[in-house]
Amino acid sequence: MKPLIILDTTLRDGEQMPGVSLNISEKLEIARQLESLGVDYIEAGFPASSPGDFQAVKAVAGAIKGCGVAALCRCVRSDVDKAWEALKGAVKPRLHLVIASSPIHMEYKLKMEPDEVIERTVDCVCYAKTLCDDIQFSCEDATRSDWEFLTRLCAAAIDAGATTINIPDTVGYSMSEEYARLMVYIQENTPNFGDVVLSCHCHNDLGLAVANSLAAIDAGARQVECTINGLGERAGNAALEEIVMGIKTRSDYFGGVTTNIVTQRIARTSRLVSTMTGVEVQKNKAIVGENAFAHEAGIHQHGMLANRQTYEIISPDEIGLTQSALVLGKHSGRHAFAERLAELGYSISEEELEDAFRRFKELADRKKNISDRELEKLIGHELADVPEAFQLESFQVHTGNKINSLASVTLVKDGREDTEAAMGDGPISAVYNAVARVVGGDWPLVDYSIKAVTGGDDALGEVTVHVAIGSKIFTGKGLSSDIIEASLRAYINAINRALAES
Ligand code: KIV
Ligand code: ZN
Image (cartoon, rainbow, N blue to C red):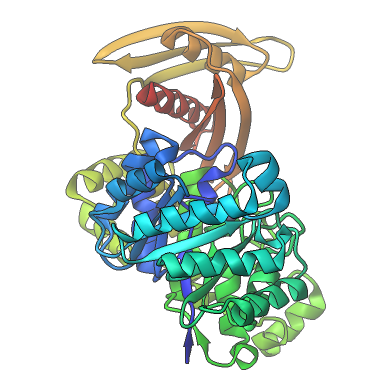
């Protein structure tokens, strides 16, 4: 057996994706799900980057007991101190130090000579080792670095105490075969490599992140860094679900490589991350896309009916795509509701259950049957709680194709109702203008999307918006069987998030 360590960096590299900004309770929710998914390490953030990141790493470190928690820091002593301060409560803490190693990064970003980079690495890794035993060292932009220099840098980091060496393809530049050769080169030419864990970390700029990660594993990498749904800056990081299912489905090829991932929890993890981040999973995405197990062509359907394996290399239930025949509705009681949530894998507090049940009842009054998928969404929205400075009380809109829309919206703040009316080009802009009047100030909308959670004419609509405040973008999410209400909830949610941070 060759156990492969999975380091999930959804909460660090994934969260660097433009427009994604998770609050602490959302990060904790995702962290708990990753723990139950069976990842070996959760990279929870970069504590020196902001007070919010510091607090989030601290919260995750304190809450997660079933796997390691890592925090990123640059090779700067004060970064290491911040990271350790946030991380030290973890059951299995890991300090992850990074410094750039490519000529372009060293000259233009670090403004350091190669030998200074080595000196700084040694100093910071030695210092980090006095705080934590488990040290990961990354050479940023490794794939555009000089290979001989990389081995000198890695050797120095190992001598200083690094126990994992990560070789990131930071800009997604490498070809698979080339990346595999680099992995072999590092192992063979770093004199003191010994039983240090070699790790791969791939970005998807050329669409090769998963292919390159798999090539690296084949070439001896014992750790892979990845994110749920391939979230990440630019084109994203390697997707955890694709790597894990690649290894599992082609165990014949990967001979003996195993992971601790409970693959039956993949679908749920993907949906939770999508709900929390507001980043939709592309329909035809491998493994977790809506169409990943859909068969349209008649010839395929014919084959599938005779034997599913004609066109299906993975069974949907291997990733947890089972559809329960049980649907909840208006007459379902609190007990049935709680039981269904537990079956779906949620263990939530009494208070959260109370709120979620109230939302469920409101929904069931308008919508006959509520499916598991809708229940998951409802819970996802409940758990992504933000202090609600403003709450939606009621709204009215008068709209048509030959008139400007007119809306009136009532919000509640500190128990007091406030109503404003406004016009707009359409019903959404009218209600948004009315909200902005109640709240006061400018809340520019930069992005709006709406999606039906399930099919059917009484489908639940989920709206995701991004609101820009200065250079910061806040995500808002809203759910309702009424699309204007879902839109309003999303906008108010984004405003509440911005207010909570100010
Ligand atoms: O892509 C990268 O180089 C990184 C490092 C911090 C590991 O994310
Ligand atoms: Zn990265």
